[in-house]
Length: 456
Image (cartoon, rainbow, N blue to C red):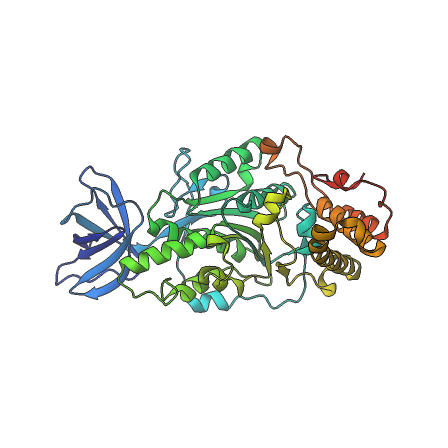
């Protein structure tokens, strides 16, 4: 076995020198070393800076790692277990179990990095679109989830991205519309813990695969765990299965890459992010694809730093998403859940050829009346609702009812709201909106539509 020794440590970046007569480990090769208290630290080779040195990123904390510590090269890249044995299990970036349930006894393993040409050759050519119902009124009406698409849930801190992801998982997994894989990238341990026990209580744990590289872990683990999740998804895609890939949070993937880039000595771009930002995002997003037989449908949470939608890390994800769903702090403060702002969000899937003419026309009418409401709201704030015309007052009241009707009690929020969650079929959503738009429910109060399921 090829062995070297640690010659430099800069946070998560470790330089390993090998003897002059020894071959350098390949890029992405996995190596292991030990701290002085015998804690194992996995290292992944990312550069060959010269002098027979392999520059690595640590996939665990480098505290207590000393110079001259012996490093053993494995001769292989990071390979993670795939197959039916991974269902119901929690794994880390290396595919090792972290649920205290023993070893994952899978005979199949796959490397987490693949050549770019292998990513592109299996792209789907079919023009057939299949809608996946989520049971959430706002999403099914205005941002329908299409099998094989990518949906981005964008928002600042505390606006409900993770809750929304958990609700979609709850509703879709319960209907068995695909193989769900949850990838926790740099998010809170508490959220992963809650998700695990919620699946356990609902009897869904055996249907789900979970991979975590959380906030407390090294940037190397947070960066590469996204590839681990996609690798497992690709395995089932190659078997012709439909996969649901949940990623929380894509911004943390970019952030971890930025930390590593700085410590690797790369000059940042003018915006402060790593110069390799687009290449790293592309290497991840282009692997989320579909074939003639199977598909990967991605629901990705994207944190918006300082609520700035023009942040380069956020903007570089836009080109890969079919639907951009923006969660608004203003909506949260007004008590609208889900806190989606439909007027600054968009969806490629909202097309008459995909959803049908009736659905499309209703959705367009909703967006039109909500846009009118935003104009009237400013006028009403100055002169009062009684001073506007009768026609405008009717539009104003109906828009408020639609806004309230598109709120919904979540199964994943029952503990916080005290209200039982509701799954609303798309047909019931369309019926409710039609009744409001037609004036059939004009006599009902605005408050009676707030946080309900279907119109009773």
